[in-house]
Length: 141
Image 1 (cartoon, rainbow, N blue to C red):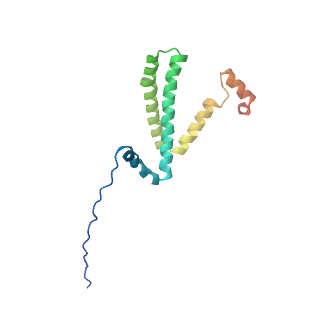
Image 2 (tube, rainbow, N blue to C red):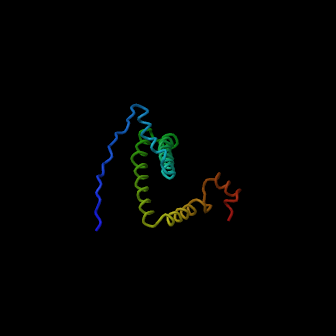
Image 3 (spheres, rainbow, N blue to C red):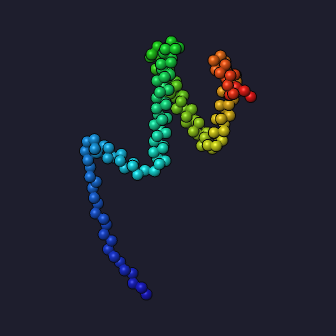
């Protein structure tokens, strides 16, 4: 019969990382992302754009409510902060759950259908938009 050869396995010696302090240390924590996959960077970029669009929308809503609709600054800030932002959060969570339940493809087709029903059927009441649609090929059926 064969003899089992046992070799002593020596664990590697732990080496503590070199910790740089200050700004260099802060930046060094993010340089590990250089070797990350392209999809991770794309996800970060999309997240940045979503955050920027949400912030700009909230600030624009406050200005619109106060300047165009005559709300006070406090009332418009409260309306955006206590009604608009929570509603956006709730609808985002609900639409994500619906998308998970019925699938991304069906959700896409439902979104296109809703858009066509609400925007592209030619029932505009704004005279400028109606005139532009009548003069362009978009308004013709």
